[in-house]
Image 1 (cartoon, rainbow, N blue to C red):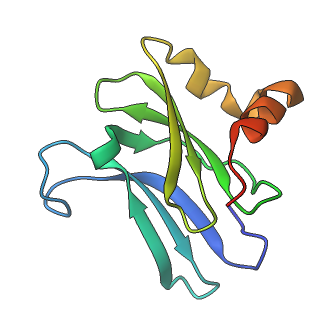
Image 2 (image 1 turned 120 degrees about the vertical axis):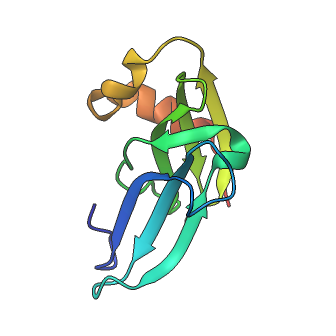
Length: 119
């Protein structure tokens, strides 16, 4: 996704041999306009196996990222402006939440934003 300052923010996962774990780890990277990595965050320690998408930046510069846990459960990562996980909401056996995260009604985004701390 194109970032506000002209760079790009991308989401996905890292797998061995890029990481030491046998499980995949969710990954978010911020790239400048030339494709150089400015920052990178992996979320395997939090139990996130795959970051599905990055939603547009919030007013505080953070992001909401739908994800899947290593147990194939739906999750939502709340990230600060540099990709650090601030909060994690897990939804056991509710994978359909992930696929419709981009189409969530504004009230859902408002609730998620209201639960986020001011970094």
